[in-house]
Length: 224
Image (tube, rainbow, N blue to C red; front, side):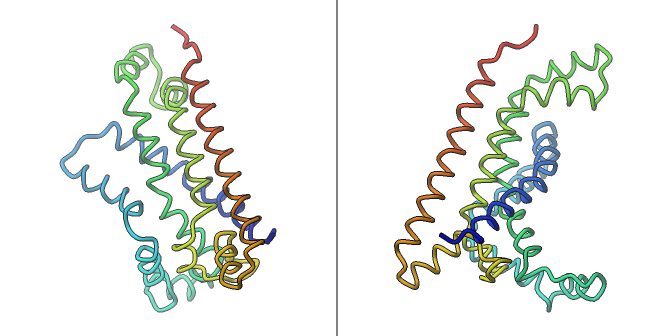
């Protein structure tokens, strides 16, 4: 068992979730409540990482963030930061690739909230911020939870994008999915089986928790 790769994957999944949650809340709510002519294009852009082959997305991220790109050169010359083949690059790639997994459930959750509730809250004197905290977020919480679980689990198992942008540097960019691939390549099938089984169990537990929690929240009585 490659514990270093497992802990790195867990760290990556947690940090990705922390970065994406506020972005997912803002973008999901905005897409749910806003109507404009270019909205389908924005939604298509959000969904693009879901349909693109991971190697294609990883390639374009590598080209855009690498040392020869304008962004990569500016970051290195100005801040001394490299955006590829380190944990920072791994995190950027993970954030981009997981955008649809957190935005879509949150958008659908906000779309399911009757607009009359927000209007009633405004009539009762609640401002935008208190309406969000007191009315919208509690009602959208099942969808938010689903998006969080999907993002976390998907990050644990991602292979193509993180390999293209981060490589396979032990202790820095070698995640458990890459470690499984390396073990198979070296015919260490026993270690590959152990790590694959662990990922399977963790993913199953996380998804089951999401379903149970969502069902319980949906059955919870709401105040009149």
